[in-house]
Image (cartoon, rainbow, N blue to C red; front, side):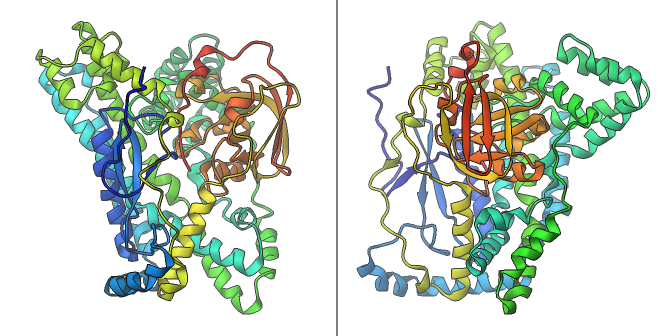
Length: 587
């Protein structure tokens, strides 16, 4: 159907397919928004650290491609062949000096602490206030022009929240990478050993709106009527509505919790559902929280592990070890918080506005399904709302089929020739080398590529999938393959989550899980963070788990060996919904 489509680079030079966030084309509503927001946020993030924007995004047939740029630490950047290295250094020497001065200043003043303070006291509260202002406006109550105004506001808000997310990309990971690069070199420890000491430093990894959920849980434990409503058989949305309507402490607590979580997207684009659209999952998560039946891991052993690793550090560097660990622990929460309080809600509120447009266009006979509206550009939506000419149902369906049927497998991994090798780090000033090694350590541990079969044999009992262990322990349970947000509602307490990758937006379901297995990831991936926080076995970077392990199979996850063993096949075939193209969600 799409054999004649050509993939042409947006500009000269090498362009790499972006595989961490999107596994299929993104919507026409979001494409230019992302191209503008991503580099703007990164510019604000890297400038205080003497690094230039490492990537420039471009859209090719709806797929995101990235081109690495020059300057800054250069460790992320394509380099010339060695014979041109002297020419490069001479040409970039003035820029290097300026960058080196910024790097040195950033470390001297602990710029990440300044950024963290700005997040806590300025940007995060502003994000929440802006979400609440937009959320308070119900698009269903607006006339056509009012809805158009709201739609434009929602799209602008989504873009601003993507900018906000990436504004904190460097400060959220640089101290962690600095800690990793040094401590692993000093001790010979694996990154997994070193990262174990960050456990407990990112409370939001244990659940979105944890404070509001705690209040609701306490109210429900004290209310027999509330518990009966929660456990009642029937439609899950009806149970949530009934909880919110209860008198006393339960009703207000339920409303406060659901107001915080309902508009959070569990993906990065407007087709991805919000948490409020998955009521069955919400009811199960609340039930687990009320029962107290979670596998949250104690922090009692953390001091012993820290002392043991510190003993392996050369004596004269132990003070440096303490300082690096303190900084890494201080900023670690920022990595999850920046998304949960910015573009998670921004994308969800944009989805709410877009779907209201879709419902009205269905009523006007201009769409077959409200969800298809995401395949229109915003100006096309507005024209159709106003009764003007626009794409036909046939044209919209063509865009939808492209987005739903094309996956990363059909997109070239590189457009134009891949880049050459990086220049060696020792040509850089010492402080820039430090930044480069820190950021390289982060990149290496975000995604780990293991040698596993690219095309697995069909599943059978005792099939074994190999990956990278991110937390020890052995667990047996039912495999639940989640490759689309709609599949979240099928997660049951004790399931083994099998997915391409997780993100902070998965947090609401994590208390349900017995283990985590992903196709992608590394020791710094989100799946690794939450596996360590909850103390559940975790394996990442299998490449093939989602296409090898049948949904509903009984599996054993061995966090010591990095193996997932299929113990028995499911009694029923995998539901058709799970045969769709996978929906990527990232560390």
